[in-house]
Image (cartoon, rainbow, N blue to C red; front, side, top):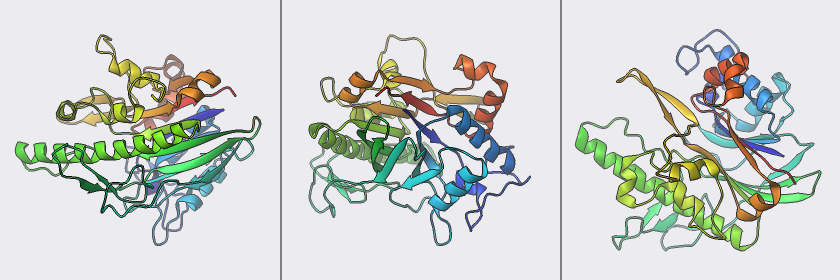
Length: 343
C-alpha cells in the first residue's frame, strides 16, 4: 500500500466557480506556468507516483459555489486517474482545504474525527480538531486559546486486500511567514507569534496522536508542517521544532520518520528537502524539508516501510526521467513524499 502527501500550490485556481477545470492558456498562479500545463503536470506526477491514497494539501476550495470534492472528482475523471474517490474533513476559510484522493478498489476511507468538543474556556486534553485548544505554550502561567485555520483531517482507512485498519491524520500547520511586516521589530514579533501558534497546533496534534497510540491504533500523521528540525532559528526560543513535538520523545510512543531523523542529527553534513522556493532578494532557490509522513512504532515495525521524497534533483530516478522532472517542477513548489507499507 502506497501512502503519499502532496502540497499542490494554487491548485484551487485551476477551477472555476462551478468546479470545472480551466484547461486554457491563461497564466496560473504559479510563476510563468499556464493553467493547462500545471493541471497536466499535476496529473502526470500523481500518475507516476501511483499512490493508493494521497493527501492533497492546499486542495481546491469549498465555498458558496465551489466544492472541494466535486472539483477533485472532475480533475481525476478528466485525467483518468485510478485515485478517483475523494474524502475531506472540515472546510476552512483559507481557500486551502485538506482532502484525500484514493483508489476505492484498494482502500476504504471515511472522515472519522475523534476527541471531545472544547470551547476553549478550560484546558482539555486532545480535543477534536474543529474545537478550541486551551494551553500555556510559553509557560508563563497564562493559558491561551488556539484554533486551527486549517483543521486537520482525521480518517479511518481500511486496506481492503489485507483487512488492516489504520488511523490517518492529515495536517497543514501554521506558517511562520512574516509577510506584511514593517521593519525588523514587527517581523520579530510576527515570527514569534506565528511560531507560538504553530507549536500549539503541533502540541494539539501530538495529544491526539497519544490518544491513538494508547488505544493501540496503527497511526499515520502526514502533511505539510511548515517546520522541521533546524528549519528556523526562532525555534531556539521554544527549545524544539513542531515536528519534534509531534514525533514525540524517544521510546515506545515516538513516531518514526527517517527524513526528520536525519535532520535531527547535528553531525550529518547534508540536508533533505521537499520544497523549493525562489528568493528574489538573493536570486536563488531555497530548499526546505517541510513535508513528512510519520508512522506509529507498531505500524513501522510490522510493514517494512520504504519512504521516498520525489525531488526532481535529489532523487536520481526523478532527475534522469526528464518528463517526470519537468512535471514535478511545473506542478508545485512542493514535491510529494510517499511511504510503501507491506501488510
